[in-house]
Length: 147
Image 1: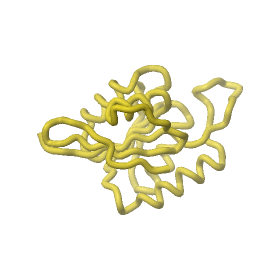
Image 2: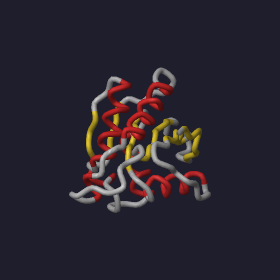
Image 3: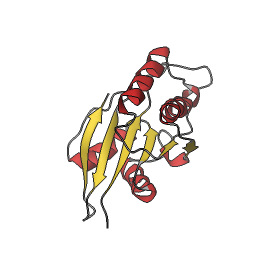
């Protein structure tokens, strides 16, 4: 097995409530600015080849911003929806999709995925991205996190 790197990201800062429920919560202007700035910072320094996200509005908006900065399209994946999986499923999807994928989802799923890789609990605030690398032996490690 060859080594490969994937990227895990929690959606940007979102509004607290929405009349239509949790699925409809959108990014705040600050959240959109934060995600745009992160994308601009990482552009040209990471090898993101595709963006896959939760179907929830805030995750889709985060993915759309990142994809726009990077010149990529976005695909939704139901398993990334809030409350439908745990970190193990997020990591399985990342492994299946392989090199260069950016998965955009929610907490606690993203925090659980990173805890499983790092062996310790870690906070994953809105808008945080992590690079996770699988080595030639199939062992994953966190290369870096950015906010």
